[in-house]
Length: 513
Length: 102
Image (cartoon, rainbow over all chains, first blue to last red; front, side):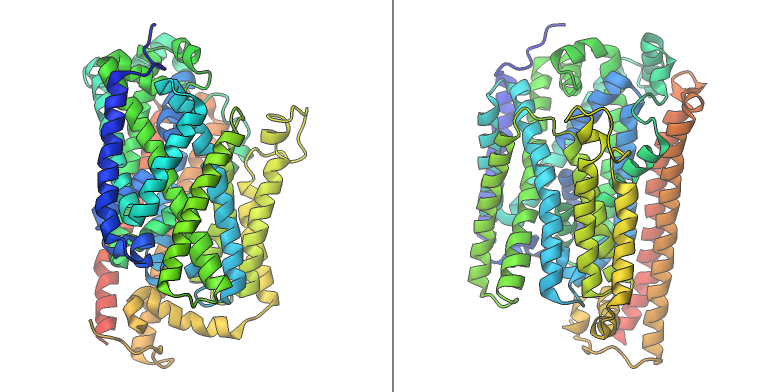
């Protein structure tokens, strides 16, 4: 089929400029309200449950989950759905174990909670190390994806695309802080879910509104096996390892955890994560329809002809069912999606540098408000510059594994320490430090020794470590190291403060004001 | 807003015991629901790896067992969250409010 994809195209440019203009207007409005670190990192704790639910969905649903999953389903059927499901099941864990304690115990970063009853300096350094590792790999994957996608969608050069993303994202975060970032996420989430819903509706209209008729057509055209698992998951241990990393990694992503500080209280944190799971689950159900719709209406060969990875399935489907105007809209939504995720990541990286390292380690927790605010903004600029640089350095590299790596580090470095600090009385400073450092380093080392890097990138025949994702080994390892080191280094003060922490965890921050 | 005393109530006192009971109840429910989600998802993943022909079997034209189970996993996540939020908005919030009044 012929497509106008990849040419600078009036509808796409119109929608994209509309989005950028609207979000910069929001940023201008938010900038006048961003006068302190409380606003810069946490939007003045003024976000409602529904708003934060949408913003969480916006932070979480990357272009990879929209274009990547739809493409994977379109090209290989059921296998793509394994990701849809894996990316959702972490949210219940966030609801049950993380959201409310985080809101009641911390101020700006998840390290606030881990360090709550432990010694600040060693815990903050280890937590910032884990946070920056997660943010860096996630950012590289997003920036390289952004450059490639924007090139495919709009036909602008890779480097120009990266710089546009960097400049616009910096404007959001630097001037509008968390308030602007939150509203950018909300606008993006509404556009993304709305766009996917409209696209799914146009597809289903051709099948009498019945998804089963669409799936049946896919099975008829491409064989019944497209409705069952294929080659993506061959080894059960590999499958479990990836699944565990996706599930528990969600509860350790710094930019997601930070969102729980933007709401006024723990009850709103709880409501917001329930909303988020509703929106995200609904969106992933839509990817079933989008993927099989693209398989039937566009066809796997036509999709692979445009992009081998299948990433252009959803835009091609939009063009096929809604014409070039709708293609422009979906392309602009994909761009907006990347911008929003990158903004959220940069803000959480800046918070780790300025709040955890500068204020709490270098300045011992006593920096004047003006200085804190300034350092936060300097860290934002540094974060934005490094993400543009990383995007350009990794041009042309295969970075798809980096999302899995970011989730594996989040699940191994951040999640175990967070859970043990909240729920396990004997947890100690040394235990937290060891758990976070071993979690980060073991995830990095094992992914380097895995078939993903050794066979996939370095072209070796075999890999020393058999699993593609290290989660199955590194998550239990981080828990075990935390437990053993804590038991070897008792810290009576930390155990005593556990009671006071429990009280604040349930009764709220004003309980010990 | 009323400011509560900074120190925990004395060990063994009634409010302290009530708070400890609430913390234990919250932890038990959270743990059970987490294990439930983990088991459902691990079960689904193992079926994907081991029972490929079974999951490809159609129930009705267009609906394979695999797709039906996949939708069911997403619905399970919603149901577990609904169970937790209902408990937390009811019993948990009432007990917290009572404890805060002291």
